[in-house]
Length: 408
Image (cartoon, rainbow, N blue to C red; front, side, top):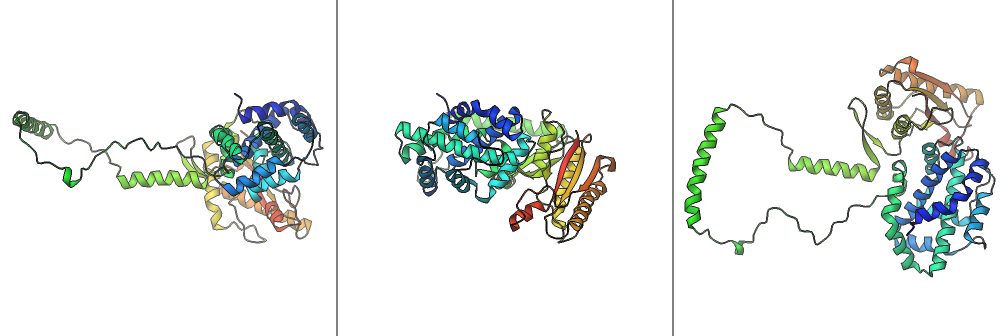
């Protein structure tokens, strides 16, 4: 029996080439992008099954139709939109808002980076297309099977494990907590059983006891003599229960907050965000199928400057140290630092500020032991915006420092 992901793949497969051509992407990268976006959106939906209010809203979106043709015709229609006009129906917009809120844009940008798109705008188009596709597909299934809300929820619960496993690790923090292993209530903990006071009976001497205890006494004497004559025995460190609990708690906290531990070549262990620049950079470096190009940039997400200056603030140190550790672990890798600003102020002043900031980051890396010939820096000013300069949120996204691998 086909899974939801398999069925969605079959529906979208005939239009892969058409979408790739209109977006200017290769079919291989587009396929990766569709797989990531569909899995993420479907993962976000199945993770809402324990929220009755959210499921009511999602089921209402699924039941409402935007177009009247069959599913295949609907998908063909959605796939014919131009690259500049996303197939974003009102329902698709509401679904993305329900699942990801203001993080939809960041999810799209991360999909673009993990799929290695040439154009970051391709991911926004694809995310909208995937949301519309999933709503059309689920709507048809609900109608064909005569499902009510309960049946729809049961369908999603049955698919939950497979869907969440298909979400790329870099994107999992967007869809909410991953499922915890189920503990069967019938499983008994096998350990030390402490009887109640009423269950304790006085020991009764027996013939066995009269034989066994003398043997144990002789054995104890022999063992004492053996260990006394063989010299000191190295003592292995014992991990206390408190330490073990603290370690387990730390791992659970990392999973909840979206952090992961990565062991780099050379044995250095980093604790880094799953969706942070460090994780993306390592993934790109280690993936031999992703060649160096001029368009794959990774934005710093914990790098701060004093307002209007190139002074790096102290809270940026952790991320800069992590990037230094990554570059030391992969000594053949060269990088370029790019500086960007919003459009507030004069264009020339913004270009100079972006160059100074890029230079400051490059110098910080060099001062921590990265050879200068592995580093380059360039300021682009207000060019290449990733957000709308008409809003504060968009301007904040445009004020950024990014990193590009120039040699693996």
